[in-house]
Image 1: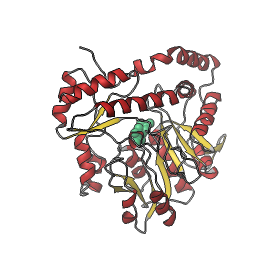
Image 2: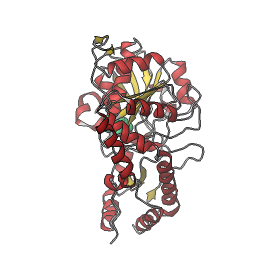
Image 3: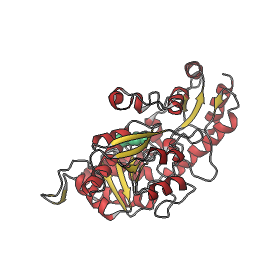
Image 4: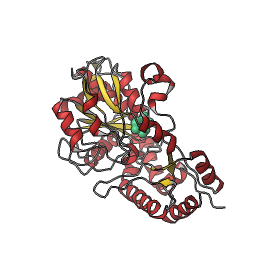
Amino acid sequence: MKQYPFLDLALANAPYMDELKAAACEVIERGRYLHSTQTELLEQEVATLCHVKHCIGVSNGLDALKLILRAYKEMGKLHDGDEVIVPANTYVATLLAVSDNGLTPVLCEPREDTMNMDSRLIEGLITARTRAVMPVHLYGTPCWDTTLMQVAQRHGLLIIEDNAQAIGAASDTGGLHGTRVTGGLGNAAGNSFYPTKNLGALGDAGAVTTNDDDLASCVKALANYGSDRRYHNIYMGYNCRLDEIQAAMLRVKLRHLQDENATRGALARAYSESITNPRVKTPVIFEDMRQIWHQYVVRVDDREAFRAHLADNGVGSDIHYATPPHRQPCYEQQLSGLSLPLTERLASEVVSLPIAPPTTIDDARAIADIINRF
Ligand SMILES: *Cc1c(COP(=O)(O)O)cnc(C)c1O
């Protein structure tokens, strides 16, 4: 029986093996492993991709978000105990960045169609302590519209995008600086290059993207022990640097990102055209925005039986995410009293299908046939 693994990173990276090896060797032989040209070039390339002035390569996506919030605290724009509105339906890292900085996450329910934070609910969550909102472009679908932007502007909120799942996506509505590309829509964005993300390193990596000159220099200093120049520390900072080998790997992968995102788009279309089982709800394809399909997520009522049927037919699947952040043990004290019915329903119904390379259109159609027999 043919097997359809959910994700096999060795196979996903196999087409670039020669390029990756050559790029790694170049760094090894050159002997500059941090603070050098690969990182600088990657930063320029990601800034161009996201249509922003600044990109700072950092250690991972969570650190990117943490650094942005800490920098806004250093700049006097956020203070301990301030509230940050975040989607309830997200990966827990979004909330961890907020909590780590002594800020309070305030959870916003999603929309059914995008599964992203519902911008129409934001205003009802605003209090005298609200200072920022963190849209997450979940599964690669932009979370951005005029309502979000207008509410933020009316209440003077910072907009910090969690762009971990959406590098290369574009919204149908322009952002604060005119661009439509995620990572450049709000005041700043955290990007993740975790190996499974659409732009994946061969280890941990991330980046902060922003048009804000002051924020960029503050994040850059914070990520390097808080130093603005050698042995001169203006903040009690961190070591959150990106290394040259990962930057070199990412520069190779970046050359293929548009093609890979386009392939994922074609796979999503093939799935949605071919899945006709009324028990399986396919994700909405929005014609006027560019989704990058970090995950292709269907919804089913009897998830256990559905996944067993897939597994019996050689199809790997995964769940993103089975337990929403407010139901995680670490947030029991703070958030377990919340009732977030749509978030909880999604968490009980979602199933991610194979979408990463080397999945082909034929594979997607074969998997759809298996799904239609459920
Ligand atoms: C992956 C991810 C992160 C964290 O990125 P890391 O690089 O793994 O630290 C944050 N938010 C979301 C939505 C993610 O998917």
